[in-house]
Image 1 (tube, rainbow, N blue to C red):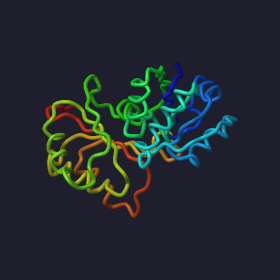
Image 2: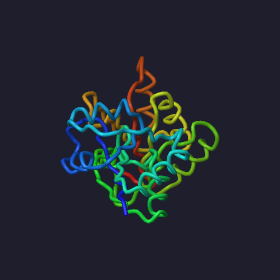
Image 3: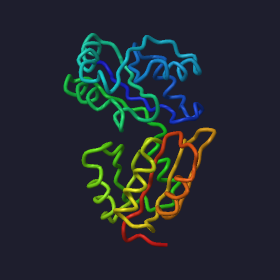
Image 4: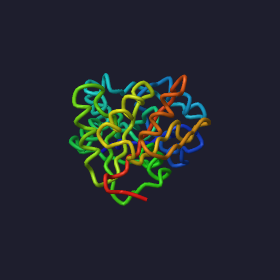
Length: 227
């Protein structure tokens, strides 16, 4: 029986990588990467030299059987993504399921993730929350925001810089100008930015910017929450 290691990687700051994660990547036979060029930066930083193979959203369905074959041959495999936990809004779910189906061991090496990092920084209720990941870019997007606006619990979602203004506008339309939110940008990186306030005011603030860059997490309060 071989082992598939699901290894969380830093979401920005390379120093957030745990010693256990480094040890794991040094001992496995091969490493599946979302982007081998991006992963090489992390691996080179920690002096990890291993055979890499691509495992990303565009080839995940094809590569999962190749991964199963490697496990069946007795190889221990690690799976990493560009940032965060494999399988959480990133490739990895199919690989983990296939490893279980083939009777192999699955071991998770935990680490930073943008969802809980932003939630902890938001100052919004975290005893119950719903993680949405990335919303659909077009079809079904409006109805999802209407569902979010009607929830009693905190919601966390990811957004690209190209759709941030659209997302804030749709949230304002669904939840009203005063719904309390937190916007976290470039978490753990040099230009980390955390803003908290009413969605209407934050939308206006971002509309006034000449450029919008980085990775975003939006934390949205439940509809009955107030301070």
